[in-house]
Length: 313
Image (cartoon, rainbow, N blue to C red; front, side):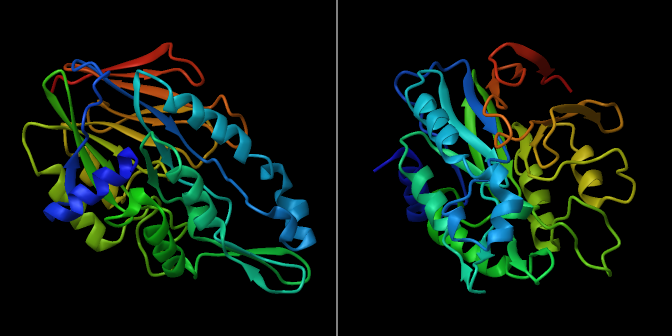
């Protein structure tokens, strides 16, 4: 039984929804390191899709090998505790074939790949993970109307989603407790009646998020989500919630396929770090190191430090 499945089963047996990471014997107690990857856009069996979908999405047709190589490397690392992939793990939930049928095995194939590695891999849903491609005779269409089916398949298949598509994890580095909060914000649009702006969360998830942020006065929070905040945050309830918590120090995200750092909040102390798409370049990853007094963020594709985020109020 691998590490992440042991974590999930332990949580279910105890009836808990927030669990802690066991520490491998080789890990040091003063730091915890993990790798942030995003937008892998894997496609399994692209050759079975409609010819025009193949033509339009073939640039993502060779992503499986690079991700396996990365997970092979991380699985033998003595310093990396786990990996986090913040959405668009696959390019589509389902896609039309040449005969008009739909092939819908992407989630199961991706989960089988991830679950085969001993290193825990934690996931966020992205917009592509809950979307399907069709062909209307003239152009490729994309719809998230199958999002319910896609989420059900993710929960059935991926160990990271054993408690649902949003969840949290606790770990300790040098005596400091960290709460990692994984959000499900993969919707492109909340519809014409939604007054907010992306990134979107449904009301129930927003209330759960508030509870997580207020769960303990002693922990430091890190939020992982797919769609990041842009320049215009006015009117975003999610932004108001997150920027109002000084113990939230870091947001990790992807979606825009670019490496970017933003300083958010009233005093610009909340740091949002975007990592570019692994599908475009397998050197697009970052190492995140948690210590007793700071969070260290590497430059893309290297362990060289780019940011040091102080935990001071």
